[in-house]
Length: 104
Image 1 (tube, rainbow, N blue to C red):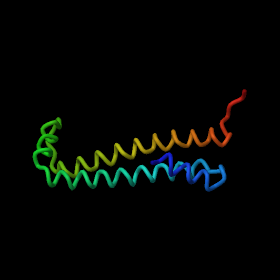
Image 2 (cartoon, rainbow, N blue to C red):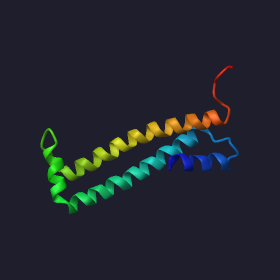
Image 3 (spheres, rainbow, N blue to C red):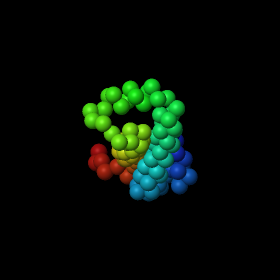
């Protein structure tokens, strides 16, 4: 999904997408998607107590608010993965625009 959004922005700007603007678009897209996923997972944990108990049993130490802790862990991991994906996608579009610093 991130690729297609950045491709649309790249095509809309006639192949002159600024690196940091594209990075921001990619990061925000993945961050918002991860927030939605973590929120839905949080709601699911309120419904399925058996699964929540299984997740709690896998944790190395007890938590005061396990649902909220799992939510924040998912959001944090999603942001980190989003930053990596956005960087990789912008390298692709930088190469496609011909701004890659390669001497042949």
